[in-house]
Length: 279
Image (cartoon, rainbow, N blue to C red):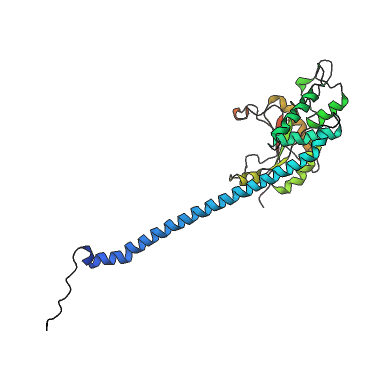
């Protein structure tokens, strides 16, 4: 009976015991680890894309809700826009419209109506820049600051009232929602003094929504102005802040010489609350 022939020895690398050991103990696990890293990276990228999409959708819904709310407000204000000229109802409607325009929330169809009322208001000033119509003067004071710089004082002692077009606006910046109550109180004081104060921005929340680190370069409370002619306005704002409840000590910071702020319009100021201590 024929005896079975022994298997022929393997030739090449596969016949090398050391190579087979290397493949089993090193190369195969390494390939598995590389593939696992690839899958993990793909999962992380997919998760990041899903989170970014969800955040974008949430922001879009929030903006849509803001727009709808703004439209509802404007619908209620439409009768007041065409109310008796310079009346309290019309003044309130124009104030809301001007604030919405600053925040980019005023529909273009109503921008012309706002500009038309601004032109009618400014037409009430005489050659000296004064308002002969006391109702027009009160409306201008409610929509624009009542401060007057030393450069504006006339030789006869008359003080021109600012118009809505050239009036200053104060933008309030807070770092933490715990500061909002104080900011609302100060906002009312500034408005009572004649300044236009459109809203209050939580700069930490804004930075987070834009995936940016929170701002820390305005740690001390400051009033920032960007045109030399706005210095007196900044000083008046700081003085009002010191008298507010609770009182707020602010530094007045002149940024008019910095080229990066050259396009900031005349009369625009920023009031930054002190940086909240870490909790």
